Amino acid sequence: MKRSEINQLIRESIEFFNRMNFKLPPWAFWKPADWKGKYETCSEIADNMLGWDLSDFGSGNFHRRGLILFTLRNGNLKKDKKPYAEKAMIVEENQETPMHFHWGKMEDIINRGGGNLVLELFASDKKEQLSEAEFDIQIDGVKHHLGPNARVVLKPGESICLEQGIYHRFYGEPGKGKVFVGEVSAVNDDTSDNRFLDPVGRFPEIEEDEEPLHLLVSDYKNFI
Image (tube, rainbow, N blue to C red; front, top):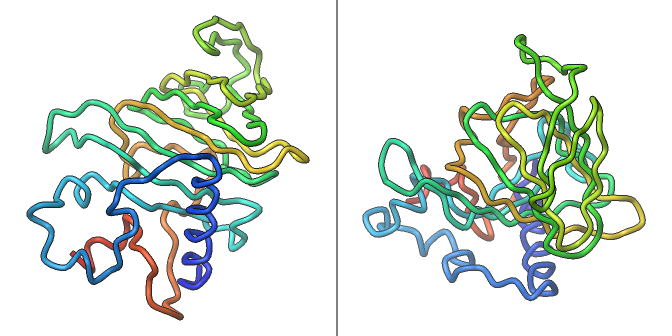
């Protein structure tokens, strides 16, 4: 992805969060120069990958298959005691986050506002493939018994709890607008805890056609 495209996506995301009356922490708006020499005081941000993050999952078409998010808080099982994480995500109409599950992380996916979020769900089998087995899942604390390739639509205010090993893909329902999605979970590790059904790229290769507006989590190693 081009840095200019990433910068524009961040600008649009800030505008969307503002429309949703959702406020980000002050360092979300720091310029690259503001991070220099701050590792000692900002090590939790850098080491736990807090902040701006996005991926086109190797598709080359972010608006068809991609996701932009801001990680607000996260623990690090090797370095601290915090056992939880929280993300704010923006999902466009028909913009897919591809089928995947997590080995270690249990998560709640919450529709915080905007359009409707569509999730397609499968259990996984012993070979980590899609299972034809039925499974139980909690939607706003209410148990639902689902079959393979179940389709769940979350309207604003609704949420779903995804246990380890539950395959899920999601996208914004067409005609309903962008979705403000929250995630509350156990500690998140995007370097080792994503099992995509088909291999994809998690972090984009960036063509530096202009200076970064704000740093991505993958930029910290080069700037702090």
